[in-house]
Picture 1 (cartoon, one colour):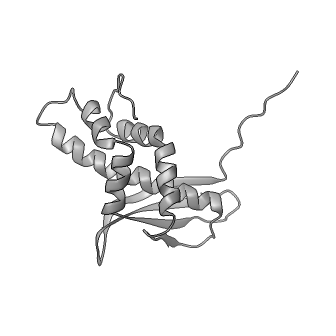
Picture 2: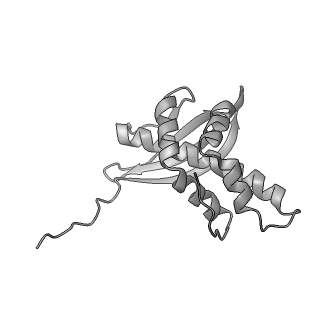
Length: 154
């Protein structure tokens, strides 16, 4: 009989600290700051993840986020929809930044506060976001307390 082992627990504990927020001196650029703690570290670090509006627009189009969001919000009243749409776009940026942070964690990260610039890993971030569309839409739906029925991402 073959015994399956439980999946390896993540060696990192990641929580969103703040974001998305505009980057000072960098118009059309946002960032999210995450607290990151590795099991073997005595203390955690903060990692700021920057992304441009152009990148967000491209990624949103790649995963057809606008169509998904329209379907997800279809049952909301006209007066509630704009605030949910605005918050959903903030949450989309958070989820994309989280995907970018995960790439850094997978490739190795040093125990020091740092910033992942908006110009690194463009192709990799795009591939990851496309592969993790369900994570992104689930994250947005969960944070907005949306009950989704038959709303799927492309």
